Image (cartoon, rainbow, N blue to C red):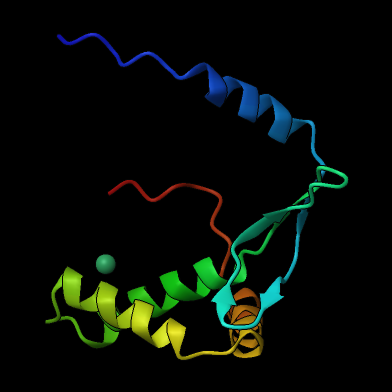
Length: 111
Ligand SMILES: [Zn+2]
């Protein structure tokens, strides 16, 4: 049995800082880029923009549903390309659709 890899002490520090809060969820728009998160260096608040990740995951998984013969690599590259064709506003709108239609499951799916 191999020894478990020791945890990086930075992880413990980060988990404690996350628990202390000062984190916001919300859209972030920057022309030409999808911004997944941002730290305001003036006040230390972290803003997390879940929309691009959620939309990318949804595009990816919907391609699996609609094009089941495609390879994982093909699905991943196409989903990324499709996301890059969307504006921030389109991503935000599709994220709202996802939030309004998705069921929240309390138990993890065990694969
Ligand atoms: Zn996949």
